[in-house]
Length: 501
Image (tube, rainbow, N blue to C red; front, side):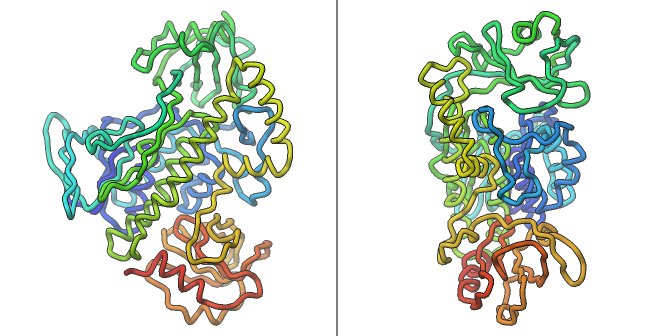
């Protein structure tokens, strides 16, 4: 197996990265320790910006087919009783979409297969060496051992990353103070307090008998149960097995004796630890998703953070291995994504304090103040952008400090060559896009690299630019405001993101 990239881990991050590499024409292979896909609903949904990212590759339609009928439930901050309003961001997905992680992985695995990327399950990486021109791994599969090499390797193998351990890379941060459990269950009987459908976190979280739970239907007669003890010192350890008796006792304690466990399907423990790699790139080895950062599971950030890591990295790594990258392009992955994860670690730690089920009087007072602040439109917009990912804006060197530049490109309705369409459809093939929304003969004279497509379009929607350069990940690399002319900024952006060195 000599390929451009070995991806270790077939979770959502690894699978989207593999799909992106295959889409760009790079050869890749995914190595996954587990012999079969996990059906556990670890992640419960995708945030609005993640939905937009999937739309950029035409993946939202099959995901929506697998979505749970939870209705339009807005996001939240720390479970406080104020909905976050994503309307001001002009998105087609103003609410989180409830799709179990297993369904996300199934859709992405199908996409990777269509791009010709094999997923080798039951293949465990046991040794790793970084050479001047390659990464060499030893892999155990089916009791046999083999060796493989690639130009680069990306570790997407979770918070307990084997690749991180083999490289001896430090993972600084704070150990978790409490252990919680997530389990997929079927109920034999349910009291009136058991939710019949999904909803706001504030309505799904209950406590009693020394426990707290978040219980919601997850389709096919299953429920997703997250629980923990109100006293962290009284809870299980991560290594303790999850038993039927434990889960049944928790359900009865919180939802009353009429509630009974029918079947314990799958489960796992997790902690509220906070850690982040100091660097996301170590020569020819890169890290993404939980292998690069872990944080308290509040606000539905984990899966979404990893998906956007993969979207940011995929086109840059493909351009690098295919020899069409500008100098330093791959380093921008760390430069752009490390601060994003650092911000998530910061605000999930804040949410952990505010979401405490037994708040001290000081924390209760803080909750009241923060709740009042979230009702203010500017504060609500800030937190909505933070939690949904819609407010993300990457720094764009050598460009004016324009709020458009570095931000996401809205999915405008367009008319291209007389045919109706949307901006997202122009990005399905994974290339960058130079989009003119007005007559711009000066742009026609600019020669575009192979990785950029040119479109002229009309739109009836309000948009403040007459032309934009859109990166493959949907972020704006250059914009020309209405009435402006000139190509210097465009040429600089093309050199920065697309023109081979």
